[in-house]
Image (cartoon, rainbow, N blue to C red; front, side):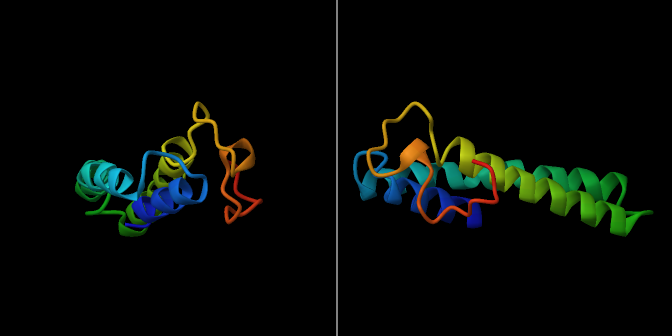
Length: 101
């Protein structure tokens, strides 16, 4: 998943966590939870809107998925409480400036 990969890259770039193995274990634990949290809205949208308004359900699902990925990466991937000496304001250098963090 893109969200897991982006969170891992942000943690690695900002030197967040103990080491790569501990961070990978945390991401491995979070992966199924994030997948379920992202899949449930698709099921709900398909069961409610998908039968009549396929395009609306698809657009709503895509908008939610993009928002959810952004939210998780900026909330979990860039924690404000962690002092990040390598990343100013805990934002990795590769993060695009036009996307708010």
